[in-house]
Structure formats: C-alpha cells, structure tokens
Image (tube, rainbow, N blue to C red):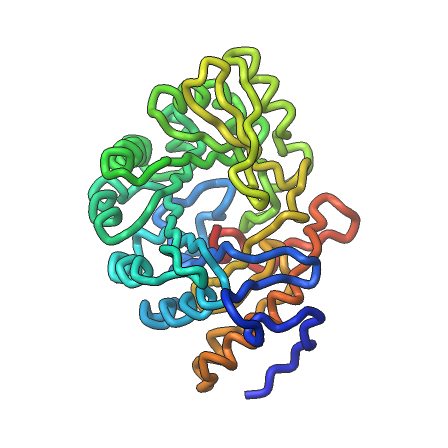
Length: 349
C-alpha cells in the first residue's frame, strides 16, 4: 500500500547500527509512547464530557496493540503509558501488560510501563496489575472534597471508590502514585491548598494541570486557566515549597518539594509555560492512529497500513516518516488556533 508522506529530512534510524532512536525534524528524541486502549469511560467529568457522547472509535484487539507497540519499542521507545478513556474497562488489559513486561528496549533494558486511570476500579485491580508487570499508576482526581468530586464526575460514590483505589495502588507497590488534577477557575481551584495537604497525608505526588482546550464542548477560555505561578504562590503561603530539578529533560511537570522534605507536588503548565521544545511523546489512539501532538490536526493511520498487509519493516518506516512530521509546538491561545478533531477522552492522555 503506497504511503503518500514526505521523506524524512533526517537519517532513517532503521538504517543505523545499534539501538535505534526516533528523532523528529526538530531534533527531539521520541522515547515516550502513550497508547489509548479504549475511548470508553465510566465517568462523565464535566470539563471533559458533555455527558451525551460515549465511545466514538473502534478498539483494536489486544494482539494488534501489542504488535504496534513492539514496532515502536524496537525503534527506541523506552516508556509506554496505557490510557483511555478508562483503560481499566478494557478486557485483556492484564494480558497486554504481561506481554509488554517481557519486552526489552533497544538498549536491552526493561520497558517502563505505566497507566493512567480515573481509579474507580483500581481497588480490586491494583495488585493484579502489579503482578502482571505494571510499574506505576497515575490517578485522575480533580477534588479532595467528596461533594465537589462527585459534582465533577457525575457518578455517585466515585470519591470513596477512587480513594480506596489510590490506597490499594500504594499497598501494591505501584509507586510513586501520582494524582493528576485539572484545575478550572471558579470550579475546583478552591481545592489547591487541600490537595497540598492530601499529597502529604496520602504519600502521593499531586500534579496540577492547566486546563487545555480538549473538552467535548466549548468550555475553554483563557480566563478559566489557573496558571503555574498562582498555584505555587497559593500553596507556598500554606506550605513553603522548594523547586526540584527535573527527572529528565523531557519531563512535563515542574517539580516542587515541601520545605520540610515531606512530600512533592508537580505542575504541568502547557498553556502558560509550554514545554513543546523538549517534547518526547507520541500517541497511538484506540483505533490505531498516530497523533504526533495532542493538538494535531492530522492523524496517521498506522493500523490501516497494518490491516492492509504491511510488513513490520514497512510499518516502522511509516512510523519514522510520521515522527519526522511532528509539530514544533502547539498554538493554544493564538489567533487562528483550532481545537483538535478529537477531545481528550477520544485521543488518550
């Protein structure tokens, strides 16, 4: 099947001896693959879902995801994060993780396997996930007060279920447990200081995320964004903070420890302090499309080529050409900015 995409301007890593590395035309090494295994979700978070739209895209079979992920790993991917939708809804998840845990990176190291979840089903699955080979988990949690939390999720009993899941993940050794909180001004920004105390009390890393225009509706405006500087100042008035160095150059979160050394928070600020220049990520949607940026206007149908009978080598060449087209940056807040064709729940976090 012919592939009508431009030839890469950089050398093809398939032609090089030794460990292959994916590098885009801006010189960024791509080593982090995010794979959505479903766009179904059992929550209807008001900043994400309209409440009227469920799954929109088909899911691949687990062996098909595994084949595609292997291709990326052979090209230099060292970290795979499974996402959704809600990945814990996906039948065959444990089998997928077991198979992934047997993969080795192009340098011979064990593949780093993580998962992002809303945590509702995590209580009973944390131990099996760890036994299957999952390294750690990130839980999406947008409030620490039960009434506020359940107003966001629109699911009764969700707060107690998620709290139990977080504690089960810690007990199972899925460490460090990270909590992602998307902040919206006038909606849940009154939870900031409480989350700082929650991080210390529950021994988790809380990461605040600036609200991005990825919702199903048209809720986003610049005024709703709670910027990094404000978050740091507000927490600092309650619990003094010290900024920490990044764990690696492509890390998205700015890290802070509490001054007494007990606990850590992070802030992901794609709107006010974009980190595109160090981006190391690429995404694979639940229906097998490559997205080189959350805000891409174009998708690349990797699964379509596989279904048409492309060999592993041909698929890898397609991946290399696609990565070469990765955007330099997003354009949030700029004149002419266009939201992506899919919302976050249908792209994968």
